[in-house]
Length: 271
Ligand SMILES: NC(=O)c1ccc[n+]([C@@H]2O[C@H](COP(=O)([O-])OP(=O)(O)OC[C@H]3O[C@@H](n4cnc5c(N)ncnc54)[C@H](O)[C@@H]3O)[C@@H](O)[C@H]2O)c1
Image 1: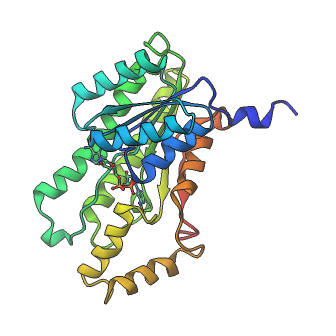
Image 2: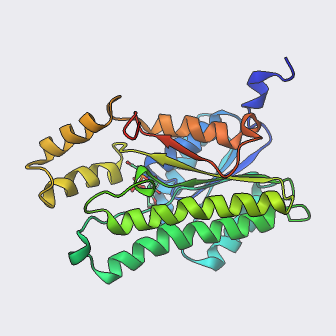
């Protein structure tokens, strides 16, 4: 065998920055990469949750730090990347996880809600890609190349009623990943960029989609909406760890020949 298989999945000596990691999928992603040996910078717009998550990880023996970061603010990106490199000694993995959704039909969708979703889900990821490429590329302050993973969604692969603004943002995140992947490869930066596309996971956001489905009249009740999603996902509801595991693969050198790809993690929903 040409390589030690377990070593290829190890993140020992790697540094990972995860946005929106104070709760939900981001918190599990942070723990998963930490458990694989990475030093993890946990950031969130909500400083208290980022701090609590980093402390939880430290108590389990992981190497974690935290920072308050609004992903829509470019100066905060510059400061967070600099803090990560100086406190944790590098930057090898970025997970653009922070995101929001608001459910409404197009005809009722407030312009301010539409713009807020694009600002956090699209502009936030763009700024992350921009500043982490600067840090990771040869000659940058981290300078070792790296892996950037963008949280898109099944809603970035197809349309869903009531989720127009969200679908728009996740479709953009998907093509932004591919464009960045190709550009980094052509420029010889040693930076891979991929997107992942989960179906519904029962985080605060996932539960809000189920509730919104009923509120918009797409199901008669929340219980019916819950059953409906279970039905269209042949393997039932996924768990945050299912997402963490895919991200571990993409963050590690086990995926060194993988870039510009889209990974559905959806219990067979779009099979
Ligand atoms: N849960 C799902 O079913 C599901 C499915 C597909 C994709 N996703 C995507 O996965 C990601 C995480 O989703 P989740 O379910 O954990 O959501 P969540 O709502 O539980 O958590 C989102 C986190 O992002 C943070 N955040 C919000 N705005 C921010 C900002 N401007 N700057 C920094 N942080 C900010 C929040 O404080 C929160 O900690 C999102 O990008 C989401 O679109 C989720």
